Image 1 (spheres, rainbow, N blue to C red):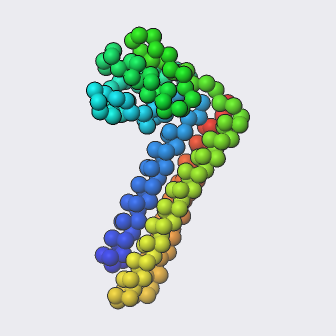
Image 2 (image 1 turned 90 degrees about the horizontal axis):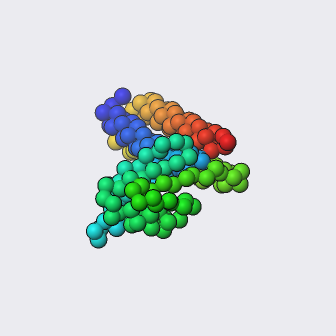
Image 3 (image 1 turned 135 degrees about the vertical axis):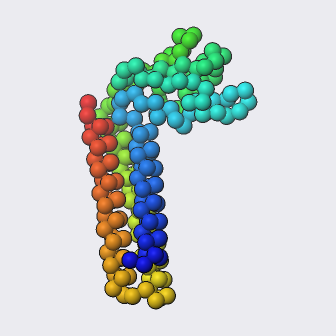
Length: 187
């Protein structure tokens, strides 16, 4: 395998892996009826005039499967955090007891579970489209190398390797989706 083909394959692997990591990150945000601190990842609070991620002003813990506990490092942040959670419109009703904020995660209805599965599949499709776009780019790069003098048999071998790599990453996406769907549909 020529150095250029190795670079193409390395680039493909790197970007496909990033697509998988991004998918995992997006799937973690989809709540499956269990308390998960990542649900609150998108929340920013006004910290002395600066929009700051919630995780930089408080600890977020899960004492049990249905509860999130937010403990701000400064007591003055309690109401600011509570308002930010309500403004985020995540469907939670935070309870402020003066020292911590407690969020009880309600169990999901069957209809809501189906919506979440649909959203999960959309995220998976986005990942697959990204991976397929990488395949197209890799194949175009191989064709350019072939025009620049890369032997045809080496080019064909590289194209097969690209397809094999893409197939492996598509299978990984499907496994992630399958696991998340099972998690969402488990009552």
